Amino acid sequence: MSIADKQQEIVEEFSMLDGDMEMTINYIMELGEQLPEMSEANKTDDSIVKGCQSKVWLMASEEDGNVKFEADSNTAITKGLVSLLVRVLDGETPDNIMNAEINFPEQIGMNRFIGTQRSNGFAAMIKQMKLYALALGSKSQTGA
Image (cartoon, rainbow, N blue to C red):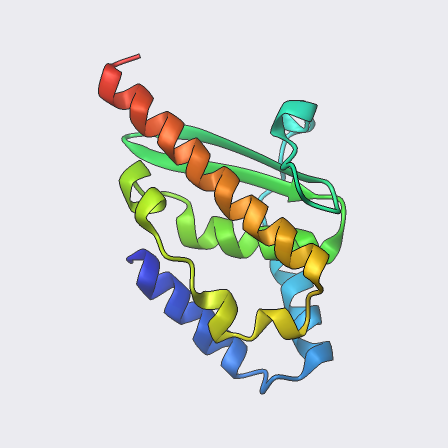
């Protein structure tokens, strides 16, 4: 499934909530609960996403030429938000991640139910994921 397909799937899921604020926030928190557990050993200062109000830990590794993400947060809503990004970008090639246009937040009207601080943090998560992809892509090209 392409990045665009995964984003469309998210848009369709959120459209079923009819813009109900409470149901949407509950759904985001449920998505966070489904995120695979991140090992405590990876929750270091180095893996904290800068620019997030909540603590968000994000790690990436390369597996068969694709980027695998591991993430967690200390707040339920933020964990749900990062889980959406992991769902869209996990298992993709570095090039696909770096060139991805993340447009599902606008399509689901995410700015209506998360504030400016969380929006800035969400943008920081996307930036960090793309930086990991860039680093891992460079590493695989140099054979390091």
